[in-house]
Length: 172
Image (cartoon, rainbow, N blue to C red):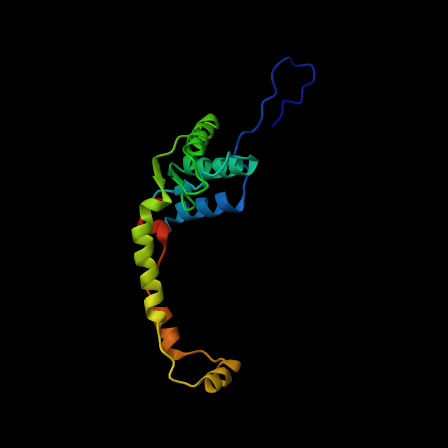
């Protein structure tokens, strides 16, 4: 709260409690109820190093690092290096400098390309159950897709498919 005495020479004192928002509220609830056991809050800031940061990046940095800090968690700086023709070391260095200028330090520095092998393996797992060969002729296939109905086989595959939550498999 602001000091309301206009004759006071003291600097106004502000309430510095975090403002409630849906992200903070959900994290607080998950931590309170131990929804994920004793797991710590893990966030990441994933810029693409193809230019300098702008105000939107600064906001994302403050959210990603700030929420992790508030809940005793960690944040990774993970460069999204998926377009090498437009990325330069100059931008990587600038981004790191800007994150530090905003007052944050990352727990781990990594690159999306560090995980290409794992992402490829997950992609194969995701598409493998969907592979099939149709034995119907094109006119029959068109008629059968005009009014689709749920496929028991597909429903069973989806129900038994392993969860593919990337964030729980590695810290990136």
